[in-house]
View (tube, rainbow, N blue to C red):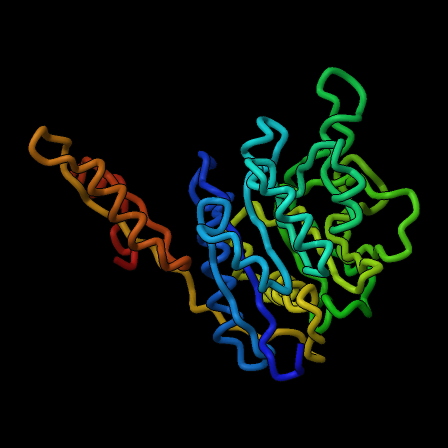
Length: 314
């Protein structure tokens, strides 16, 4: 590939399956990432595609990808909830990894079946292991939600260019399953769980023997976190790094205007007016802008008595 050829990034969002609003916002996440990279004043030349529903409609687009980012459900409740474990997708992914494509997994998409330990640790370094631990639940890895200062575990890593330690409340996954010896693996981010005295790795990077790169980060539960500049810079750096590009000295710059809130006042459902479907479609439409947080009520009078309209922007 010539130096002038843009690196290709395939962003994949899994289906939304029922978390509360502003958590596990897969579609909003990749829409926001695409916007930040395309509007960045110092990002390298990139060709970015966004794919919804867990997989590209035309999987052939992955053949051009220099890195694949997935944010989705995991495989612990039902393997088919993880986009990689449906149909022949894992085989397709393996083809991409074998040719040297990078990969990046966020939050719940770091959950993988233990039988794929060798492939997953080769490609991305580590994963949430929910099958080989003690007790009836069998979880080796762990989950807790708390606020912590995220520590830069390898400060000179390119992913951390321009990044300072930052406070982050998140649903952290930790005690991640790594290979016992992996010379290409480095911890990137650490936090200290409330029940531990030593920090644990929640973000890591791997460089594979074929020169390709992987990055995993177990945070990202709350969509609001994207408005933390160092959180955003770190993840944008990681995406660029996994393509094989050099990361700019000060990291990838980006700006997000403040979030805004929309209240939709709708009527009671009626046989001739399916307000629930209409309202759901309207919420989806306005939230295509990932900055928007939309709510709805079927009781405008009650809502006006209990809320201050000035708290909303629209």
